Amino acid sequence: MIIDAWISKSERHIGICELYFNMEDYPFIINSCFLAMYSVIKALFVLKNIECKTLEGLIYLLKINYVDEGLFDRNLFRFFCKTKELNSEFLQINWNIFDENIAFETFNKTKFFIVYSKNLLNELPKLEIE
Image (cartoon, rainbow, N blue to C red; front, side, top):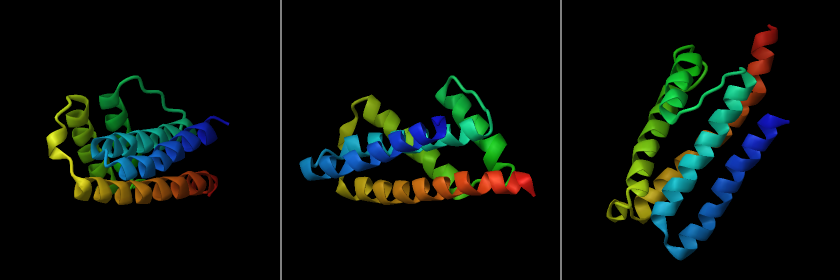
């Protein structure tokens, strides 16, 4: 199933963070966390049959289809957007802004984001039946 593939991808990104912590490669942790959240959002989109081709479109569609509908936590949405901005710094090789504290905080919040989203994936089909 496509949803399971996106979830598996998300979990692989989270799992690799331990290696990055051991190597003290903190920027790569931010990147992996962002990709983990991106992957689980793609799973949410599959559930609602939403297609998206750009990152900005993904954020917009997450907001209107989940956040604005009260189906997704607004603070977690903000966290995803903040991590996207941090990841942009990573992609620009502006790595001096990353340290262990930022990486650890992002990693822990991302793990919560993933658990929250997986629970939502399990609950949404039940809500549609009611």
